Amino acid sequence: MRYKYENKKRKYRKMKPRVGRIAILVVIMIAIVGLSVFGVKSLMGILNPPKPNPIALYVKDTSLFNEKARNAKEVVLRDFAIGKELPRHKPLPADMKIACLTFDDGPGYESTDYLLGVLKKYDIKATFFVLGSKAEQNPEMLKKIIKAGHEVASHSYDHPDLTKLSPAEVKQQLDRTDEAIRKAGGKTTTLLRPPYGNYSKEIEETIGKDIFLWTVDSNDWRFKGDPQGSADTVLGTVQPQAVILYHDIYDSSVKSAEIVIPKLKEMGYEFVTASKYMELTGEY
Image 1 (cartoon, rainbow, N blue to C red):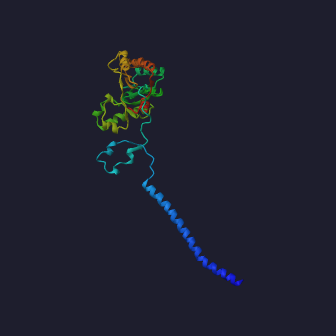
Image 2 (tube, rainbow, N blue to C red):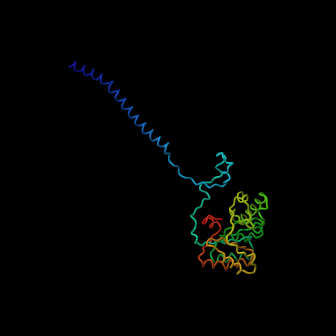
Image 3 (spheres, rainbow, N blue to C red):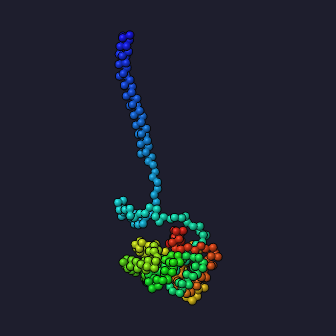
């Protein structure tokens, strides 16, 4: 029995190194297979890298991409705004009728007060491009405009041709008007209608406001005392998406608007403010 036991021990001792070698080989094989799989995946990642999600950037200053901007370091983050000011809606159907009533050069006195009554009657919100000087002279009327829920925007302080002013003078025109609007309880406006519609690229890029012009000129200043003549001009030139220019400082102008509003309603127009018009159409 002792012989058999010793003999088994010797056999076990002979097998022990062999088992160890097999275990080592198994570990090595597992490692090789694992590294191979990882290597293939890594190689695939290099050859076919995952595509990043696209990011929409609105470029405020396209001059950064001219031939002088060859060094990418010149393009800095402050010149971009992710997702800002991109079109929020698809283009409107060509036959969709919206009208934006705008009134310049006020606030007036009796004429503006009468106009507010007309707008209330037809449940319409308009946009008033006010002069800072007039706002200072007649703050109570401006407060009334704001309280009625109408939009207030800038038309400069005292109606100069902004293209003939220095940058500092342009800034002063806008700052004084913004201050007059704030004193009346309004917010700092982001919209500017430059007097005479005159502006330069430099003005547009530096004022920090959106330029908002018009598509239909009532020529109300030509038809003083003749509201029907001004109304006929509007109705004869109106397009499906229209920004209509009036001046609320003339009695005949607000009487013209009183003629035009129900006619446009009958034609199927929806009335919107300047900001809403921009939002819907992407146009200024």
